[in-house]
Length: 299
Ligand SMILES: O=c1[nH]c(=O)c2[nH]c(=O)[nH]c2[nH]1
Image 1 (tube, rainbow, N blue to C red):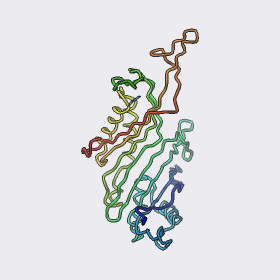
Image 2 (cartoon, rainbow, N blue to C red):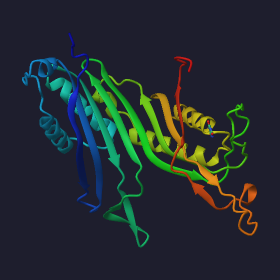
Image 3 (tube, rainbow, N blue to C red):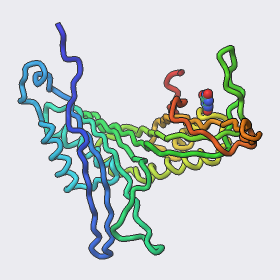
Image 4 (cartoon, helix red, strand yellow):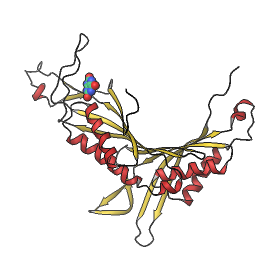
């Protein structure tokens, strides 16, 4: 006899825009997000007995996002996620957990004639700021903040040598290579007991710090490998943001291949003479790591 072993449901891809208009200065500040809410609880009969009684409609969840966005700040997104989660578990006695994911898109203020423009913005890249939260009834809120889709490249300052070699190995060692990746970085906060506790945290400062650390270490580290460089990033974020328990990175290694052009009039384009490369879309390396304060388990 089959049984429902797990269920959650909600509304995904709820697009949200909020503007703050400073009446005194005329300066507008805009935030655009894509929100997902998913609810868990005593909802089995909706699946097993076609009973819609316990179903807080996904449309209701969407309307709730709009109303709460009007009533509260939506920035920082971590705080807005906690407000939404708290609402769902407190309003509906049969809902015991609320998952909220918020993707915050970039709208960067334009500089016109050397001055910040009061109400015009541009999308400076596909990078997004992401928040994933789970609020559980009487158990507080777990929050993970993330940077995703931050594309970076360095044209030197990266090596890869001394790796294991056997009969399957073809890759030559290199002491100078191009390093490029699309950063996915996440930092998991300690569990907060309620929204009041969440409101005290400087999430925007932490996001800025994590981003600065990622870029600075990427640029300045004389990289021995993706693995060694990403570990340094994780260590530094843990050192700088005390409320963070764990940092993880997922970094694809986007390869740039040398092209031998010696067939054409002896052109030199390899080793130290390499200037024209072939960027590869696939396959790519894919390197994960999680850096925690206390050792939990061996890899
Ligand atoms: O930084 C790297 N790590 C690897 O594990 C690896 N493997 C590989 O082929 N190139 C690289 N580069």
